[in-house]
Length: 250
Ligand code: PGA
Image 1: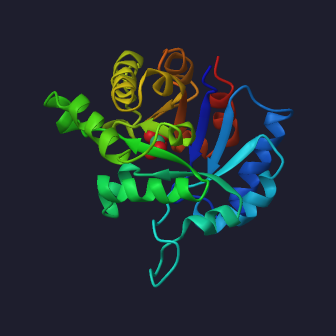
Image 2 (image 1 turned 135 degrees about the vertical axis):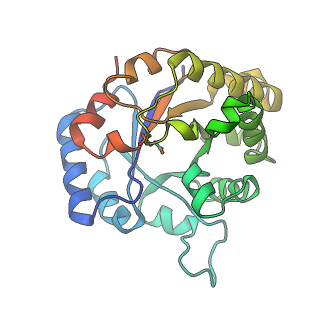
């Protein structure tokens, strides 16, 4: 009953020409459509152009971050309405790289999530533990606390628009994927937290993506887990053939 959602997080890769070439390859490979929802998240500079390219296609457009203010003297920042303006349907908030390098906290992630929702954007909220936290046995406590803080003051009705991405930091860009059993265990813990906050009915409808070195050769096993409803893909989303294979998971 949950439509799987596979999103490509291109991070700081792709010039305009490269972005358009990748999307052309994806559109050619997708043909009529896909069995899941497909999202690409190019860098800001390529959003408007890719937005035109994917209009009325099976691919949705997403951004990699957003600021929570509507407008103003915030040099370098991008407002939710600006993302809507170029065709974005989704926006990633709280990616671990934003938390690590750009000072995002659970509190600012929560503000970004509310700003996205208020403007009709669907947030993909990332959570995940570091290696030392996992080794200390704190992973579940850390991740469920991030879920609670990031979703503060969100209503059950709004949760229909929210996607959660579980991305263990030690698995991002390392080739070191969580085992499907470990990923499933954390997804189940996240869903149990959603049951506590929003009730069972809402929790069953929320899509939880796994992210962290998702590749053509591990996507099938991950997607076979009952609480894994999609993937947030970095490196393997930068080439059409590998991202297409991930979209076409078995
Ligand atoms: P990766 O990145 O697939 O390259 O590990 C995932 C992410 O950071 O979203």
